[in-house]
Amino acid sequence: MLGARRGESAIVDYVVAVLLPQLLHGLVFGAALGLLALGLTVIFGLLGVMNFAHGELYMLGAYAGIVVIGVVHSFWVALIVGPLLVGALAVVTEVATLRPVYHREPLYGLILTFGLALVFREGARQIWGGDMRRILPPVTGSTPLLGMTYPNYRLFLLAISSVLLLAIWLFFTKTRAGILVRAAVQDAEMLDGLGVNVPRVFTLTFAGSAALAALAGLLLAPIFTVYPQMGVEMILLAFIVVILGGMGSISGSVIAAFVIGIAQSLLTLWMNPQRVAIAIFGIMIVVLIMRPRGFLGREGVLE
Image (cartoon, rainbow, N blue to C red):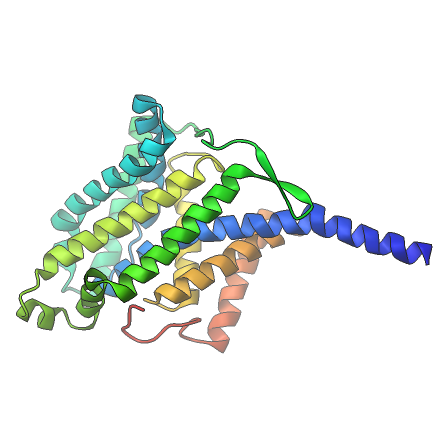
């Protein structure tokens, strides 16, 4: 009897001390990954372009935050100004480079965005160097939670990311502007015939998606390090999320982001990073075998 109680106590201690923190880490990372993947989902659903430069927009958001914090010494100001700066860069990028290839073969968009990724990455390296940098969390301390203490900044990140994910879903399902974007996905020519400035819709949507990626980069910067290659690692996970959720499905991408975030966090308890990456790809393959369109994917629909 005593041995059984000790065994139960050891299990409870393991859950509270190890599994529960990792589960929360996964939720936090999944929420931020959802912001990054949503931008990728919207760009693909509306423009039909798999944006390989999306990871670099995530990276530029972190560096923009470093610059703004260096000037105004406020993370909260950077949280607003940083994504706006990256969004402005996205407007110029979309008008100057992406717009001419919308009606061409998808391969043109792939090659173009791959080239843009190289330009942004090497540009960041030339401006800020290749050294790793860190942004200090604006919220410090820990909060007692479920028998443990958990960092306040991670709780803040989970809360703000979850609120933003809900706001984005409401935007696309309940507002006139969001409905216009979804209509542009279905039939851009018809929308143009109704007097809607479709190129402007495309530009603003691309800029908003870029700002989301930048926001994710800035929010995760106090947890991870900032360096020019950081977008390469995240874009692979973002693509997996988009594919798992269903190409063009907003709701599916959110679900997939939390699944991948939790899976990656828990798997790190028992595997090295290389094996975790293999396991994540394995999860994607299994899901696609069972559901070829992903969790909620439907052909040609941004939902």
